[in-house]
Image 1: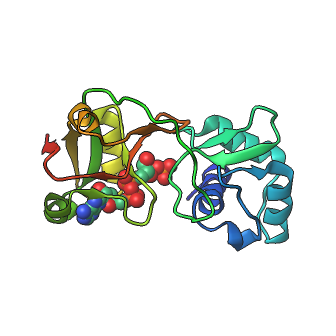
Image 2: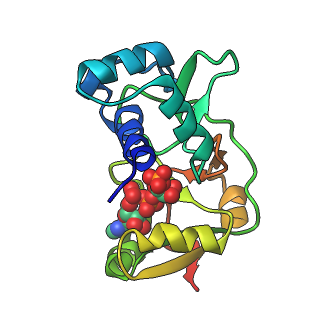
Length: 181
Ligand code: HQG
């Protein structure tokens, strides 16, 4: 059973990453929405949300999924978007030598063929350490970890971005830039 915090976290991920229209809100290009308005709309659609619970979810999120704006008025998901409303201008960055991607064995054949693709999301998500990659992979089935030669990709002109919560993003990892570990 999910507790209130986990339920609310899933709800916020859903509306801030994928389906803002589900509660009749609009996100700006950078993914932000006014917190009071979000709460009002969530309540209107039957969600048990209030400011205290929202702030609790933000501060306890293991992956720091949500960011509050400096003025405290707005909230956004740090990464993971599929909605076309949002096109965050992430700061391009030089990646570390290697990055990791956790996935499931059943995807391997396809990944070996096409490389890592963003699918329904806007970016391929990469982790800076193996432990995180492992927990991401476990969500999909029997996990495996790919080690990505991110610095070589960068030298060859591929762009990397670092989200607010330290998840690394890139558009595509072709199949010659990773090994299985
Ligand atoms: C796989 C979570 C077949 C890919 C995590 C992954 C992350 C392919 C799945 C964030 C493929 C997509 C994102 C190909 C990639 N053929 N399968 N060519 N290329 N895939 O959930 O990276 O908890 O969209 O390996 O922590 O698992 O939601 O992406 O298995 O940061 O905050 O297609 O979501 O964060 O799955 O996870 P997802 P992901 P939250």
